[in-house]
Length: 128
Image (cartoon, rainbow, N blue to C red; front, side):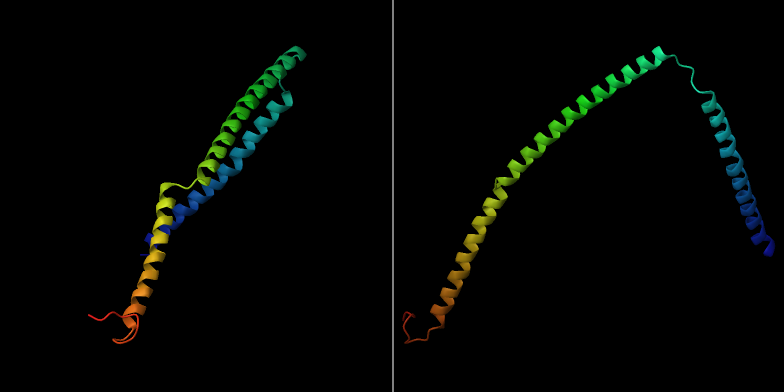
């Protein structure tokens, strides 16, 4: 039984060691390659840099124009939503009417109870 517990533990330990070995060696090797590439640097002429900058500026202007247009559309939608929320809808209208009718119903109930509470010879109760 101890053997069965030791096998998964050993396998897990081996996987853990393998992971740390790969993790420790792999990123440092890649980092060294990246540093060598960056140290060499790109070989671009001044004219190439100017054209790249001009293209980047054009791209940024296009993106800025597109974002401004989309932001304007969003602002218009928000303004339309505010206007529509200010106006009461059918649900609020019918709810208000129901509230008023409920208050009148409660008043009628109180009046009917007062009328029925009066005894037989007292004013407010009709004799049959």
